[in-house]
Image (tube, rainbow, N blue to C red; front, side, top):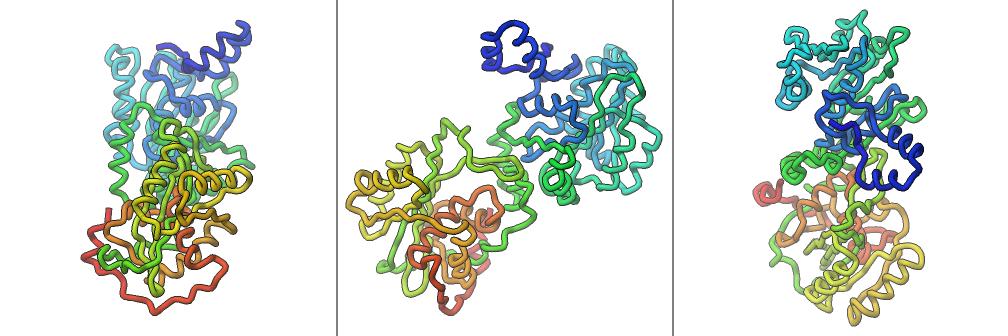
Length: 474
């Protein structure tokens, strides 16, 4: 295979440079590969393979980001060098032997060379030996003292796949096995891959995200969109079956979420028939704009310490109030272009009717003023519409709504769209990757109860019955 992993755009850029400069840049952007690596690395895998001057790197984030592939590629980069030795670990041998796990993957890559007798595979030792004499082995670190089985061994590449399941004592000890004899011209690399969470997730979060930069430890984020070889939509459907915390970790690569949030819970909201909502109730639709064109989804929202990021949603949150009780009637949640957003807001206003007030978060600066002015004059002319300048953090703005929800005074219509998305954000707030619906919820509640006021709550009502609630579980 060709060693070039440059994209077409990169090659076009190189073409306009002087030949020596282009050749040098091409060399810098191309990781060292061998014929035993049958795929061109993705952009994130290429970064992983190029960091030969960094001893310790963690590659991970969302599930499906090509982490195990990157590990095997890294181990195979120098197998044409005599004396080179690599080892790849999982917690147990069973983990190594799973379909499409490291050993199974390595056999798919290397069995043609084994069958031709170019490469030797020892089933007993779980070890490949290459014509140069270099080797790639597989091991496991299930118990706290398993690391001592490698006492006296030396490796130039140590890879730990799904490291958050491997005890920190085993991880730290194996650094003593990372060494090379004088004259062996290969880098010393300790490489870990992982999804957030896991039995020892907190330790590795501390090691790479809190202490990492000061200690020369590098984190490379990877997600579903970084792996072109994966059927992403089908995999997302599979992850949708998980609970909100685990789904947030595996789908969005969120390392900062350790458990459910501490401000809201889906169990605080009783779902009721829409026919029970009083017609004479006051109503407001609060809009939180995020004009994200689906054709241009490289436009991202803010990134967390995890390095992962996700597009924002435009949310229109409709809330009704009558005699101290509140009903969530409808949630609009879409990723649209600016023009399509305007059209959707206009259609929604027509459906809600003139009796429903419309409020919209006004972004800071002149652009926010211009946006609100346009909606007043053109899109929502004739409606009870105003822009609202937010103050304080998202957490502060959500406190009154949170208190009312915990007291059981906020109900949810069974006709409400995006109920499950709202419940997921509620369970994770303020640690989840998405909080667009909660922002809309806070804004709508503040229309009735401004954040500066003191909420006086009526007597709590009975919580939702299990039979009715069960219809709205994932």
